[in-house]
Amino acid sequence: MPLAANRFSPSDDEQFQSLIDASNDGVVVTDEQGNIAAWSAGAGAIFGYSGDEVLGRPVAMLVPPSGNRPQQSGFEGFPGFSLGISGKAGEIRCLKKDGSEFPALLALARWKTVNRWCSAGFFRDVGELKRLEEQARQSQKMEAVGNFASGIAHDFNNMLTIINGYSDVLLEDFAPTDAVREAVQCIKDAGLRAAALTQQLLGFSRRRQPSTKALDLNAVIVELRQMLRRLIGADIELTTVLDSSIGQVQADAGQVEQIVMNLVVNARDAMPQGGKINIETRNVALDSAEAEQFGEVQPGSYVLLTISDTGCGMDDTVKERIFEPFFTTKEPGKGTELGLATVFNIVKQAAGHVGVCSEPNRGTMFKVYLPRIAAADPAAAPADKTGTAQQTLLSRPVGETILLVDDDYSVRNFSARVLRQFGYRVLEAAGARDALALVEHHDGPIDLLVTDVNMPEMDGPELTGQIARIRPAIRAIYTSGFTLDHPAMQRAGLDPNAEFLQKPFTPKMLAAKVRSVLAAAQNESRPVDEEKLAPLAT
Image (cartoon, rainbow, N blue to C red):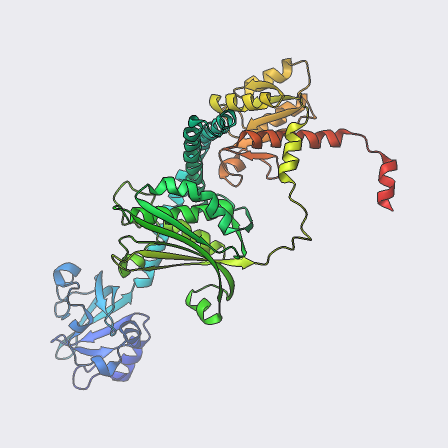
């Protein structure tokens, strides 16, 4: 682009133009009156103007009316570039041809020709850089959330083991018609919600690996319905319209519960004076055009979960940010500021899509699309005998001796009580030293070690190694409030393939795990009958 005629005359216009075009920055040269005398290709790329559109016009056109002025930017000569300032740089707001604003770094240069002073501004669009910096800050925030969540998970899950575990014990003691049973059920529901919150934080920080399986969304919603009614209160009407013909989705049951609970709680908070919440499921098919609108979504069959409310609604500004971590319109102290970000994260991991339709004072509708999977052939699928198998394990006559090690007294006391109720002999130890002393002085057999992983004196895996020197055949089950992929578990040296029971666990979960490990040990210890194996070889 040639220089504007009769506005600025270096010794060679073409060489000067080539020089400024070679810069990655946008170079804007002005005369003493503050009018644009030269315009580089980089400036055209940044601002969107061609040289013909700007040459001879005031350089102030590049700054928004409400943008940085001399006192704000620190460049007293801007926008006229008329003072003798050179080499300084600072951030200002600039204006593109389409009217959009963007942040730019500005550096100034000034020189004198034969008969006049000229100024040049070097503009660098830092909008993308700022976006990346914001992503980095958000990443740091999420890392902080992950560290916080993982830091409290161990102790919190220990407490939940007691709350949820004893709730199960009490529920077994009360008849369905007993008035106290409802109160105990409320305690258990609260404990389950607390456990779900912990898993939500761990899942959001990607410290928990989801366990996916074929799920029926209707079954999940029906299971949650009673709890949801307690969550929203009596002044909000909850209705469900569940299509009985919907297909299954491949998802983590706990994560699907998080989606439903987060969206319902958000709907409740949008209706402080009461209102209606509707939950609906149905099958949908997305063609290529529809899938393309959603971004990274493949065309095909989906199960659509819709949660709508009659609340205050949202404007476009809020809708654009609702899935950002730590963005909230709620009052301080209400909510985790992670609910919708968690929903977005879970749905994206499942190769689905979540969208929102909302207008101020007209309510909100969230639409969650989860890929529909092919239904399994009922005739080919084996009958589900999980419950029967577990009951068989739990009902078998037992009497083995278990060494139970946990530095948390309440968890240890609860676990010991459960194991004794199932017929085991239990030796209790508050730490590694007590456990080693019991092993050395106990005359009878010790069939199994159940130990916490992270303890003050010695971690569980190291304790197992010490005990194995005395009793080489010892088997071990490890428990922890941390997830298997947590760094604390790796520091403890836990084998990823070790027998592991995540806290909080229920009495039946503990008893079934113990029984299965002992049964496996007994089968391995039996001599092989080669005559029975011979027909299998043929």
